[in-house]
Image 1: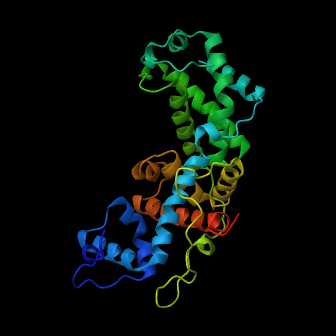
Image 2 (image 1 turned 90 degrees about the vertical axis):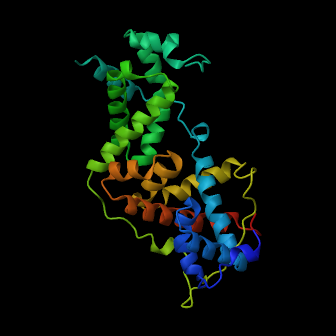
Length: 93
Length: 202
């Protein structure tokens, strides 16, 4: 995205605090056109918020990777008491 | 082991055995899936007794609704979802405990609205992310450090991929509360991960 596209004429510049507050809706595409343009303009001018955005998104991806089912630390041992309780519960009417 | 089958799961001979009430098939399923389901329930509930109850409740409701199991997903995926729902029932009914504030983990700003501390880029945010087991452990531990009400929303939205309305309903809060908590939880997780992953760290 170029700076020309990013800066909406007449828009009031957002602060970093406001940028971070609006980040959730921004990533969902839930902000209106004007607000989105303001967010884009802020990003074009603020390396701190570019870093913040990238690392915020990375945190979400890292959570997904770290908790992916294949990586769950599943205990080898089957909890016998629980297995018996489940099987007994199944037999109840 | 349950085999991953290319045919529709509802036609899977194993599922047919379950539907026919085959006791051995049930026991095999319970033995195979319980450890993983217990880990999922523990992560949400952080209490062994509640987690065991949720797994048991999940299996009981799964057995009762086997006839409704449409076979659109694997049995393991179906059980996972049912267990998450059972854990949610527990979460909703159990008494709230006071929890630590999340404020200290949120970014701080100067009076003029600039970042109080310049956020750094991280070492790697691409595909090689978390290639080491230690890094994945670190992320799991960081998620566990989030206050309960935030950790739960993060797990349900970002990991279990429930939508906002489902999470709101399950927790008995508004959609907006879910959105605010998720945004804060992600910010807090970012704060906890930054020291390990920002550039210039090992």
